[in-house]
Length: 189
Image 1 (tube, helix red, strand yellow):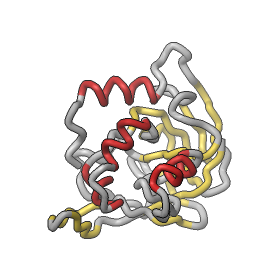
Image 2 (cartoon, one colour; image 1 turned 120 degrees about the vertical axis):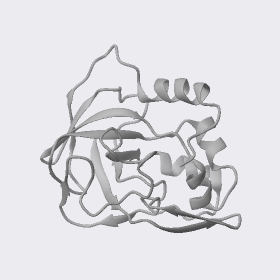
Image 3 (cartoon, helix red, strand yellow; image 1 turned 90 degrees about the vertical axis):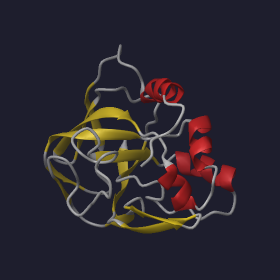
């Protein structure tokens, strides 16, 4: 497993269907080392801490392998890394292989997997489409949140080492399915 890109963003206006929201879903690649703080990557901001960020959702990781499937599904839409709002575009694993509680070493930092990302209306707004929430719920390409266990630094090109796993823990995909069916109305934020 490897970090393909580290992506950071700042809250900014996001207009969709004549409504303006403030969101930091627009992430852009950062080149060079990034400090990992106790609850975020240095230089990354969150607009609505009620539903994003914080200790259990410190960093959002998204498999690079999903980009080809999204490209095939969406057609001619440009999909630069970070377009799904992820902080880490990663390669070499998926929601079927990562388990809740997995401990991952990246650079000199250490993280634990906490939960899948449930799509919210800001994904629709980011893509300027009404169907992105439904698409992600159907295709289950959710990515997952990490909590910081040890601060440090990381950067694109760093290997991701699985430090610990519990084979009896739910996979991210299994937890996504459970949450998506329990929460018939996706997160507002």
